[in-house]
Length: 287
Image 1 (spheres, rainbow, N blue to C red):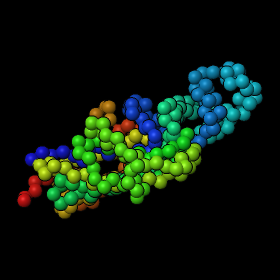
Image 2 (cartoon, one colour; image 1 turned 60 degrees about the vertical axis):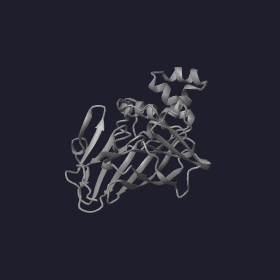
Image 3 (cartoon, rainbow, N blue to C red; image 1 turned 120 degrees about the vertical axis):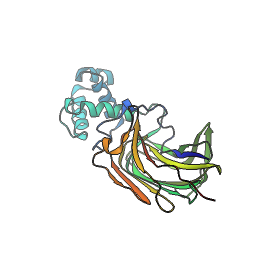
Image 4 (cartoon, one colour; image 1 turned 90 degrees about the vertical axis):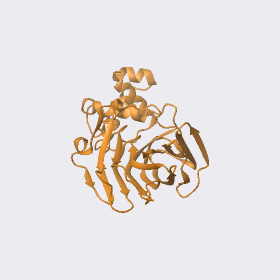
């Protein structure tokens, strides 16, 4: 008998989303209490130059604007960050620029709420995952929903907002499912995304964990794990990042954890790049 976990479910919304995220680049305040502000392209240009150390006169020359126009834009930008001086929001601004730079993507977003519900079958051999998220587009335009997970076996009955994917892409254990958005979602547009699928493992495999990786800033995450009968022994909740794995309460002292047949974990502002795991001792099934 082999025991594995319901492998990392990475649910995303984008055309091309963060393939090289690293824990050290976590936006501290954006993943803290701050909802990312909406900036125009011009405001973003000015903010980037400000962060690079350009003076007002240098920004004006670089963008062919008057110093007074740059000053006006700067005040508006800082107001959107809730501060009056660049120094007050230094860390926030640098993190914002790192996270919401478009690069090769067409859109970046923020999840205000993410709800993940996993129902495990009685034999611990299959599970049904529902993933609900709502938020808004921060920059650019989003033309596809993307559901991505890592598993050696392909999930079944994949639905995104009630529809089957318009296309798929499989690379090794990475399974990507896309649903077109027409017309695309523009900056500030609300996003509601509900995805679901079934994971069926080979007969000799039993689930011993489930995990959620945070690949975009999230305001609140709720992880629900529904066990088939009496809960398994030694249910734990951990956070895994580059520093290692720790108990979730060490990272989030104010989180809510309810252990039982229905185990519920509620976390405010989960860490970008970290993996949140619910794991338990192997369950022996008597045929």
